[in-house]
Amino acid sequence: MNSNLAKQVCKSSVSDNANRDIGDPAQPRREKAAGDRDLRAVIGIEEVTLKSRKAKRMQERLLKSAAIVFAQKGYTATCIADITASAGVAHGSFYRYFEHKDGVLQELLVGLYEELAQATRDASTVGDDDTPPTESRLREFNLRFFHEYADRRGLLRVAREAAASSVDGRFRDIWFLMRGRFIDRTKKLIQRMQSHGMVVGLDAELTAEALGSTSEQMAYVLVGLPESAPDEDRLTAIGLACHEVWRRTLFPAASGELRESSHDP
Image 1 (tube, rainbow, N blue to C red):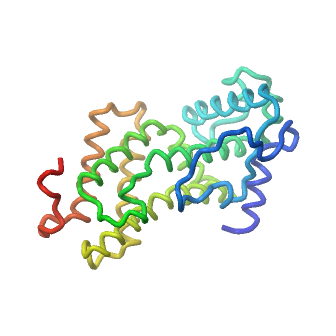
Image 2: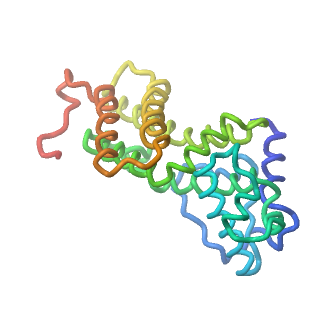
Image 3: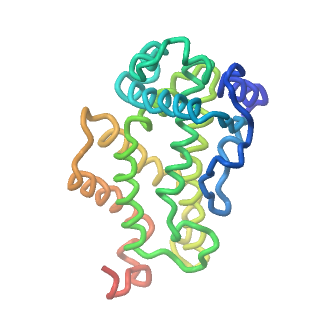
């Protein structure tokens, strides 16, 4: 990431005209697990909190409205007037909190990044757990991934669109940071399996990319793009199909020692 990007992203996060201060200790923070990277710190976005409750409510109102409009119209087609109309506020009110639509999308993606980190965190992918993962643990993780994706499919679709169309690359970098966490956890999972004599011979990094890309593309095409979200049964079927690719890669049936113990569901 170039140094100019951090300056551009920081500048566009929230307008200097907003009534705010930095690092309000009264503002609750989401807990981060050890090893999780802070998106704001990595790309240089200041965490800004507003002084008055009224200002906080207005900012939250604009964020919620922006999330709805982005999901409906997409990143490119959305304009500030759409966001303020959805929020039911004057057009000029937007600029007290955000400099332009990129600023509001950045705030939404920071929240999305942290939510997904919490939602998809699993002990089987954390490096401080020295036990090898099991097939059932991996299946649970893959199923949860698609259900969590469905809950946020509109904003995830917009994040991908913005990454592809961002002129200065800011949203592309955010996207790579978001997916990079998932890929890195998978790589560490494979490396831990290899430390137990499993999946020997696989390139951990490239295999993690291949498996992650499979999950990502299936989620985007089958969950993110349809007009409506798949129902629970369909999401489970998609998750199981994706898991089968992971299982055959990481738990090949020909190797009896890699199979689940009989008491695993």
